[in-house]
Image 1 (tube, rainbow, N blue to C red):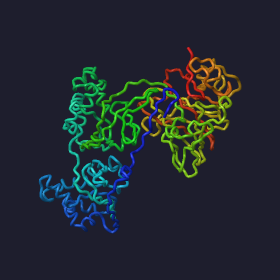
Image 2: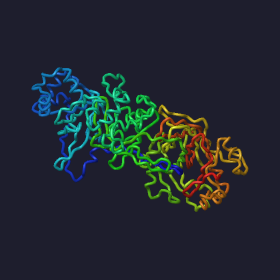
Image 3: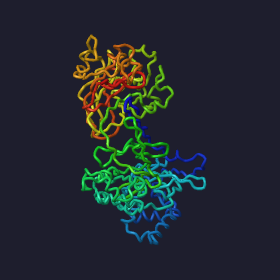
Image 4: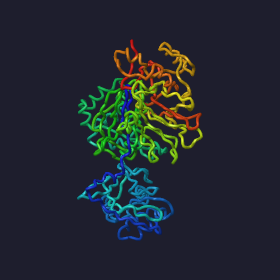
Length: 605
């Protein structure tokens, strides 16, 4: 989204398409056999075809899982055929299934079973969403061989027969026995010669030990996994660090590399994220949390490239780093590893004013009607919002969604010439189910700190009363103290009252929790920087377009945040919102000001 001033624009991230959509249409797709047999369970189906599955049936029998997979339920099993089992036995120096213990074989079965029915249509590029009974995720992908596309599991096993539906689930036949990862994240990194410098950084900062735990040692399943995005030695050298000593000399300033205030510790912590995030997970969220308090890594999908920290901050484009897919999605026993092609670290930033135009939605900006006078765009189409930066409480068949529109009258003739001449219009109600009870807007990037939030709206004699909150439903939820009453307009006291208002009354308005955010004709005519820019149509036009202080929010994490407006009064009343200002508490709250043409009005010395 783009702000009027110092605006951060970031392409909202979208989930990678199901891998089937990645298949090149010119290629011949593998024709998988699909069978449906409601009268047979998983165990019964395998026993029905002993020439193909007798060895895996023996594994089920000896492991004691035969009855489990014969019971009623919903399961998905990736079943290796006899050739696959024989190849696996040879690999582990065994000649028969009964040479393995029942517990060993039980773990084999667990790694091949999901407790849900998952067809190939639900596969995404990266991993199967459901975790195996063993406690590790399975990777999915696609490979092209001789003009044919094939589904892969864990990068090496091909599905040779898919979506065999039986009474208690789905069977996918594979040509390799799947083997779980046994090395921890720390051991996996250390064993790879590409990561010598990063391995030293792990050991020096104490992260080697914290990434070297056995999965079974963590009772809380939500904390068993971590994600590490690291750089190879060549990427670190390309950034100017010949070896670990050079990296440490540049980053470590405290003399204690295990201190959480040391920059080397923070560099490593910034590369570690809680949870198991595969590429499909990374592109489905706008950011990854890190182990540095309040710091995130932004994520973006550009074509097929996954970019980290590729942002626009305060009007400056900051190129990010690309995830190296070839060396990513590597599963360890307690998480997953990815590699970035370039070196990256935390970027020091300070809170700065963010002046968010609600019409600056990337999906709208791509349309020909965006900011064309007299045009409007319905944001709710075919039962779905067309922009990812807005959410409604619920969408029904009769829901009236938000509308983006632009001023139709010529410049200077419209008393409601919004900033950049566009506005977001929607209806809110506490009882009419065709109207929204609440609506949320996703802010541009906010640096962690305390901000005053100003809601810039148009006066409506029958307007609703709104409550403002941030990040509702998360551990950062904050409900702001001041209600926004759209029936109020600007006067010298900041409340509904007759009388002219001069610029000398700015302080009085602030005292009453109001401000004007639109410039007057006089300001645009005399300001040396913005001379000739068009203000609102009349000298008093800004009175009916005030900004109300909703309160102060404490932003704990540098990220984009959801701002929710909830109706506390009204039955289908219209709302016209122009902007939301996020201004650091110690900054000037009155300036800059805005006008219909691109640009801003700064306070004159």
